[in-house]
Image (cartoon, rainbow, N blue to C red; front, side, top):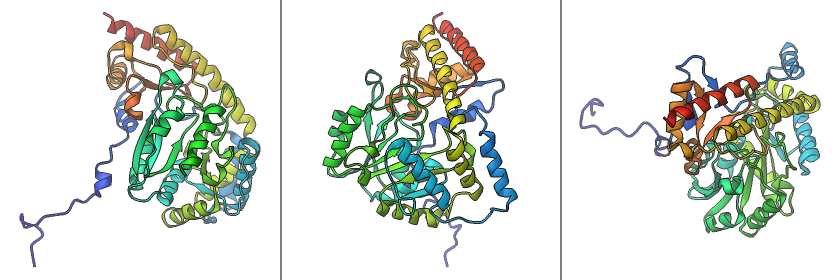
Length: 397
């Protein structure tokens, strides 16, 4: 028998190739640095600064007091699925059967993960827009798909241009992943452009995954779900959750709605990897849908005010910034400084103790921008803008 310590013995890599080559999140790497410093004003973390509304927290507490600590159905509790489908029909104008066209997940992240694993064959191309949430290309690669980028640009308000999308489609194109309102840009899609995208999806037989986690946080115009457009319900997976609009990030509850065949396939992956979402969290989510709308609207109104405060401040100090129409992020250009987005973020943090996220963390076409979250107090936003103004002045010396 060979000695395993023999220097001639060749060991295979411990980590799978497709994971070994996967880059770590640019956001997390940057905030490892932030966590080593005191008195930092953070405009970086994409999380509501509100506590989950009391009635929702109380429901979670009461769930534990009643001893509701068992598994639920793999798909989620029937009551929550019924309420989700009611909410989606009422607000997004798409009707789903709660019995077999809805699944409750551990946040939207899990919903996206199991959708990718249920749909994508090795070598299939999945088209997505950049700048984008950092998980998207990684999720595609972990499902053994091939990420295909469609760049979006400030001149278009960072909306998806259907003509550019069309040029990216090949015989290997399997799916299109959308996120509007968008993280990190706050961009939205007009009905007219969504209708063009829908026509392309139908013509080229693309499945569409639409991540609408920020859809309640809309400040101008109407939100249109692509799932509601003609010919799209049967080829769209609607992804949503409770983290952003209801300030429930730590509860980790999301959901997906879609055609029965796809939801059943997603349930298989969910069943073997997760089992079910937390019973307590599901009962709290049910309360959010039933009685949380007023609190959600109050939080949205506050974000609206803080959006205006931040964006107007950036433009005043010379950082050109579009007014985002949704989500809770501003995406100012820092090209005038001559610094890369990473250099800008790191030097700003060291000099003024203000944390922003380099735009390059969200894809190559995010370079030249930084993401700033306005889910922060008005006082912190004002102070952060003042510190950034001082930082810009030092660069000119």
